[in-house]
Amino acid sequence: MPIDERLAERVRSLLDSKGDVVEKPMMGGLAFMVNGAMCCSVGATGLLVRVTAEERDEVLALEHVQPMKLGGRRMRGFVRVTMAGLRTRAALQKWLARGLGGKHPPGRKHPSTRRG
Image (cartoon, rainbow, N blue to C red; front, side, top):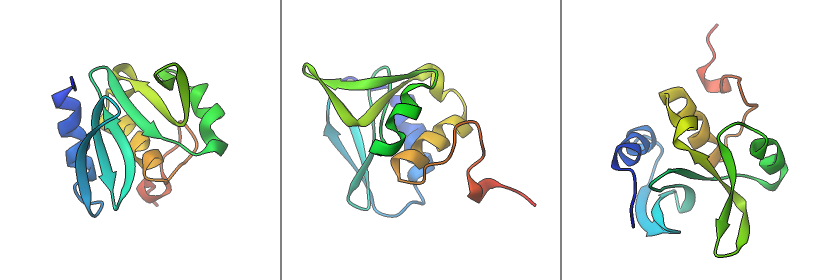
């Protein structure tokens, strides 16, 4: 199971305060389960992120995002984000927020990070 260890460490540091976090080898990567639900999975070339059916098409239109395929079929509840889409801490935080169910429009700050 090849994974990007640096990305896994970045995910660990951001999920550290999110409750009960468990790591499990799953879906060809290292899955991060938060409070019993899969948030994401780190692989060798990027991040697999859980998304809702309502946001899936919108998310797939974003740069650096691809459908998740397992075997010959697409997994509708997940998308793959390439490393280019995860370069900054803020970008990774946004994807983890989606995986945790805290979705927000692309290109905008999450409400909990707004000032003023």
